Amino acid sequence: MNLIVKTLAIVFMAVFGLTTNMDLSTHARASEYLKEDIEIAVHDAALQLDETALAQGNFVFDYSRAEQAFRESFNENTGLTNNDYELVEFKVFDESNTKFPVTFRAEDLEFEDIFTNPTVVAIIETNVENYFSPNSDDTVRRVASYTYKVNLDRKSSPPNTIIDGLVANENGLFWVVPFTRNISSYFDPNRVHPITGVVRAHNGIDIAATNIVNKPVVSATDGKVIFAGTVSGYGNLVIVDHGDGFETRYGHLNSINVVNGQTVVGGQILGLVGSTGNSTGPHLHFETRINGVPYNPLLFYP
Ligand SMILES: [Zn+2]
Image (tube, rainbow, N blue to C red):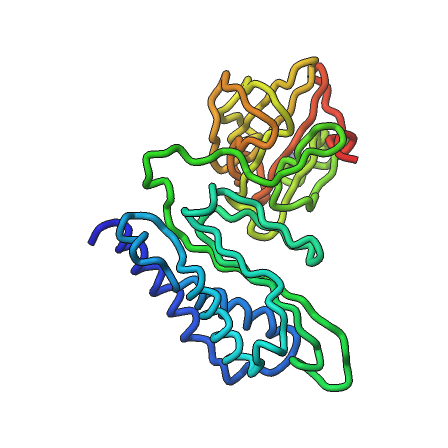
């Protein structure tokens, strides 16, 4: 079997395994199951691949069959008809229309994710009365996505290192972990270190969230990489010099995507989130320094 066929076989088994193991009869009509029903439907949609493109080594969905499969699966599992809900958004990201990684945002749902591989995403809006319980006219909107685990690096073209869709703030700075804004530990010159127990300044902020491992870390702004390597404590570390004494540091990376001396632009991927060095769990340790002195990074991200 060639690589693509083998990969697909594995993916298919994973998808079929997931969908067939779910006992659909246990699906009570309660709001927490709406997301599950959408998840099953996007899985089913993701099985609709363009076989001609696949034969040529391109991972491409069959768009019309994908949407049809989505509706068939969703309708069957929920008992709804097309008239009972609105398919607010149905999107497929594949090698024919997307440079990965790509950011997907559903503003009204406060949902944002970075897709690194072919993905189907859907948003459903329905009336609570239709789906859950009588005597209520609330509407509810849910999103779900399914991403293939394929290695797109098999191609000779270099992977894109710029994430589409990122927006800089009023200071011209990109948030350094587009996946999440969650801060697990703040800048604190008098912090008691979580591992050593001694008072030791926390010279930056820690950004952490569920599933953050291997999410991209991007450069706050344009600059030059002045360090890319391993340091005790920091683990895998990238330091970017932005000129005028302004420097940013990115610690505990799982992997580093840049080399010392490389010029980078704001939003460019420097590495992936990890837990290397002195770290109690996966997070990005992010520092902003001016002339070597650490300042609270949140001063730059009001
Ligand atoms: Zn830290």
